[in-house]
Length: 364
Image (cartoon, rainbow, N blue to C red):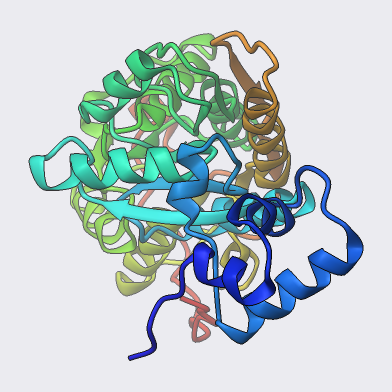
């Protein structure tokens, strides 16, 4: 294993004082061109690389932004982090990703502390509300931004999508198509986003004069398998829904699979709408109607905010929310004919047979 060289060795080989070598490598202070050339040649010969943590302790910047993620896995996280990386690099920063089930556990807090010292700023993407690291972040007043979080107020800037208004727009789209029995597949409560989307779902129903039915709200845990299981439950009810609003696209994919497995079709028998507009939303069959989250705008704002804090700009602990946009594709359509005698809730028995299904072109 190659020996790690020290700055003093670089200085000795270049024939300069250690402080001069330090200035040349850090790019600060005056160093003659001739001395800088010798120092950089010596550093290359000795394979010297600066210790980033030591540089941070001296007050230098590491040019790193730490991205903390609870449960890296959902496709939506990939999209957010990809956008963060693009905007971070445009401002001269790289990302350091740290994934953990919890950040406040004893075996993780030391790592959090180390990364907090190493990175110039932190970006918490979809953190869990019950993770005590959020409280530590507020106390330490680090340069940090929380992304896609709706569970509770926090004393750091938050940037997210308009979950409640976006969900209301999704359900209003179904209502405009004549649907009245609309189900909601919820996600896990950790980030608070599912609860906000449920509030938007209820808002739209109440505005249309429809009393929300608790039996039509089922949890799918934000995963495709959960969306499948939740839809199986809904389809097994005595009066199944004519439309399903899933709190994310992955659960919507599961809903479509469950509907197809019953010999039914989307949207002729049941309409499905998702939330997020991940890339595979336009690759499934039928293509998914969904609410588009502006990941690029969210990421750009979050990076700009945290870099501003690093640069010493004062930033209020405000919440910035970007609108979600309805993208209509093939998975939603007019409600099927309903029996007026059953108060527009019971499907007629004269429904046409389900047509033959084409194999889904799934990209997941």
